Length: 275
Image (cartoon, rainbow, N blue to C red; front, top):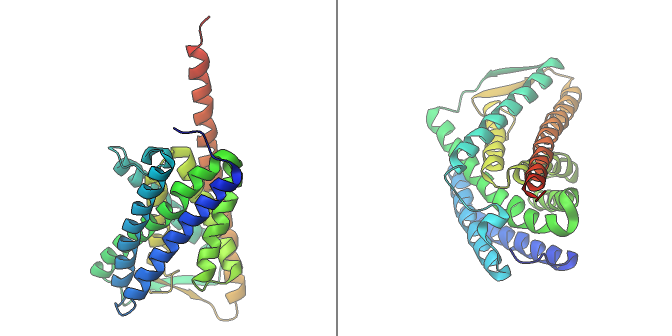
């Protein structure tokens, strides 16, 4: 692998990559605006993922590095890792619902619109959209910023870029920073600890799909969350606190995984030393 570029060149290339991926997303979204949901999300996620992967190939060739150096090379362990990440994401979504439910004044009722076909298409769409976002943010940008800025410096920069993209997409700055920003830290830590994108893609897709199933997305899922009249602010606060707590604990778990990985590498390195 080539020597790491300096801080400013690394940041400039990461920004160029993120903006390029955003342009691909915007063009794709504009071309599919007349397609109904969830098909439009599926098409956008698929096309934008292909675009993000193509840009990854272009940028790694530009720098003379490999796909594996930015965690974007598929391998025989990718599918089991994706499945592991997906399972973790479903657990986190369930824990979040438990926290929100424990706060009171909220209940879930069966949705009327979502059937098996809608559930399947939505699942595939969330996987495709997660592929696009992980390639665009936790692939090349995160891994190329990790060297000059360190793990947490790179994480904060990528989380800020991720939040800005969501703000440009119409989300308020508060929801972008707390929602997208905190989520980015978790997905980034999963990418760094596993040195790949399969786990964060599965984790990201399962979280979004779990939120959809529980009616916490804009479109109705399998269930619908109903809040008792007069308690919306209290429930919203529980949703935010539960989200930060669940994501924070999961991030800490992946950070421990990352630190344990480095400890194992150190032991192997010392064992290999002569004498």
